[in-house]
Length: 114
Length: 116
Image (tube, rainbow over all chains, first blue to last red; front, side, top):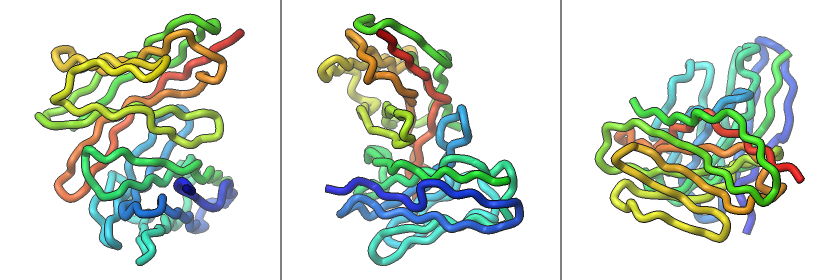
């Protein structure tokens, strides 16, 4: 079975631009979460979606937004990119939201801002 | 707020040595879950283990073992007879229920380098 898939793998943008990152969860998983991982740090929670509804949001500015589609795939959008947005963006899926649910991660999208 | 501390930034060992990665956590929740993930250079976080706060039994899976001690808020990970393929960054994480969502709080990771 396919794992969590993310696209694109790498992306280079300039300051002020916007970007859309995509994620397809493991088949049967209905919850998708997004994390940002800055070099040398652990991943930081951005969003969690379940059944197309936003269930939680981390401490990120409104420039970050996301949505989940009826097929449970998800998009993360970032507007007005800043140099500090350079990071590995990880998508994770789980059957449902829940503290006991292991989250399974994709390979991530490496975003570089010039 | 929850917090996970991995004090060891980087560890280097020679193949076949045993190595222990430390994890200390802080939480006010009485029910919580702890996780370990492995991140190879490819970037994907690979799920290794989940432990709930009510189960303090140590767990062994092949060369991997985990020691959960609630009294010291620690959840340490030991690799026995390390191999070059174990080289990666290892993250300890704590699952938090925010009311409507569940999020993982990660430590800063420990980079393990296993050499021949």
